[in-house]
Image (cartoon, rainbow, N blue to C red; front, side):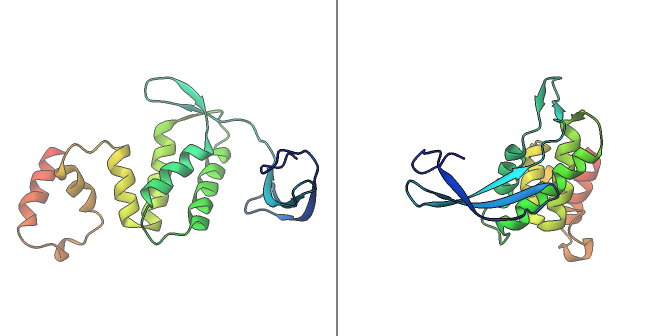
Length: 168
């Protein structure tokens, strides 16, 4: 393993333990050249998943892209990075269990939305607003009406909710 600090190839494993998900190993390593320590994760590589985009293009599933999107939605919220990574792990596992080599991007987006809805309402709405391409405040209200009990809203919101229902 090449040291990320000095670039030398001479590293040794100090500690090895199971990772967060099945078929993952976490290793603590130490560089023999600069004595820096770092962590690596080894994963069993399963079949690659192709994501079919809206326009028909295909690209490999990119875990880092999903992680970045969820991190962005959770920005400035009290959500730990461990919780975010566990969510990404669960989404990736769900996709792999589908046992289909090509998965529509819509399915990936909906899995992310469902996961965020369980974690944090604000992160959920942030992600949904970008993913579902909200055009105006009515789109936000339409999404929020399922999250907020109607009796908690002031009476003037009834007209707004009716307008939102008419657009659906």
